[in-house]
Image 1 (cartoon, one colour):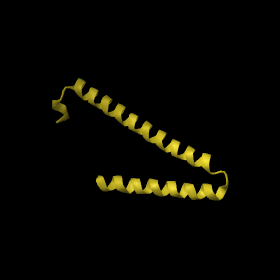
Image 2 (cartoon, rainbow, N blue to C red):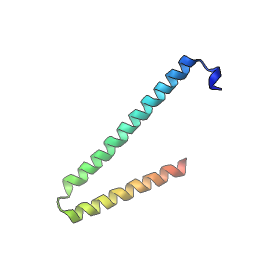
Image 3 (cartoon, rainbow, N blue to C red):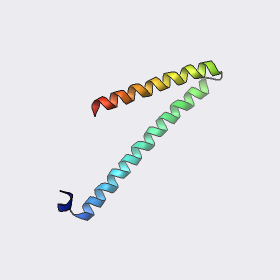
Image 4 (cartoon, rainbow, N blue to C red):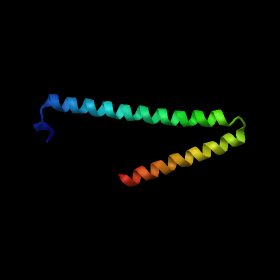
Length: 71
């Protein structure tokens, strides 16, 4: 099927897809960096920091599980 498409069009589609994936990756990394920074700013002792990180880890696991169910 790809052989029937114009090579220039295929190249444009690939470039657009890569751009969109990079954009989404950047947004994701920025989101989680903000979350980690919030945790770091609120918790100055090790015990509360550990608990907050456990909560963040659980949120991430829940999100992964939800996304896997969609796929």
